[in-house]
Image (cartoon, rainbow, N blue to C red; front, side, top):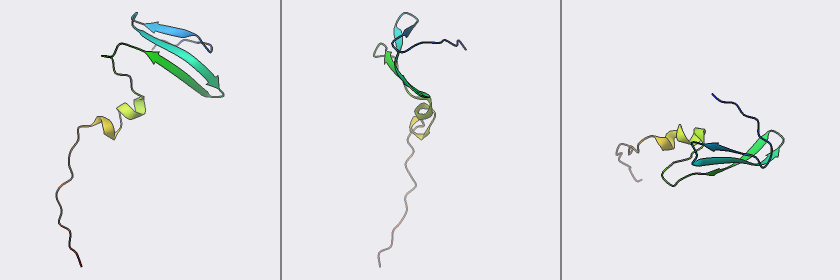
Length: 67
């Protein structure tokens, strides 16, 4: 893992095609901006590893009784 220190407004270039810029720093929160080619997907880690990243599987059929 490469660890870098960047200030507000500074950026990092990855492989010459992905630009990550520090947009703002407020306390412990850092806002980042990403510029990448459209064929590169950028997702938050918690979204990418969550239920939405798994293939859709429909629920089993069930019967409902009406009173």
